[in-house]
Length: 148
Image 1 (cartoon, one colour):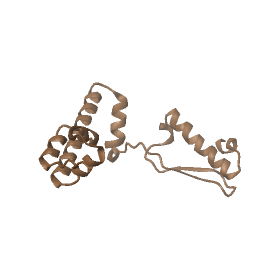
Image 2: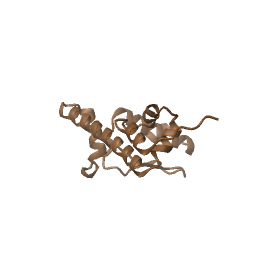
Image 3: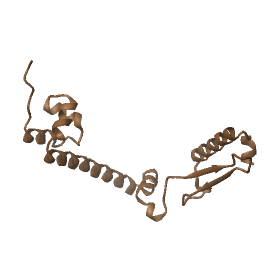
Image 4: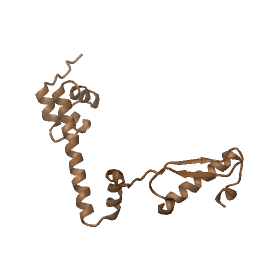
């Protein structure tokens, strides 16, 4: 059986530098398989920290790209950013919906989001209607009744 390659911490740190925190890139640089590279990356605190720093660097690059896109007027990026970073100001991309009416009562839709249903785009509205249709099928009532 051939002797296994043994890497020192300094060698693993060199393989991590500039990898973007991607284990397969580290493995390619170490000329080993992914599992071996991952094991060595997690072997020492210094290598774990180096991988975390690489990933944080990539996040910084992504955020810089996003901000540049927003400052150039990309409204889609601006809306996405607001739903992720502007929640404390009332921007939210999550619609929490509860549906009742299974006991023969009226179908009741409640939104616990800060957005009102008038702000839903066409796709979100179609998804809500599909959800209501499913609730009616499960309930035995007709979807048409629920919409009226």
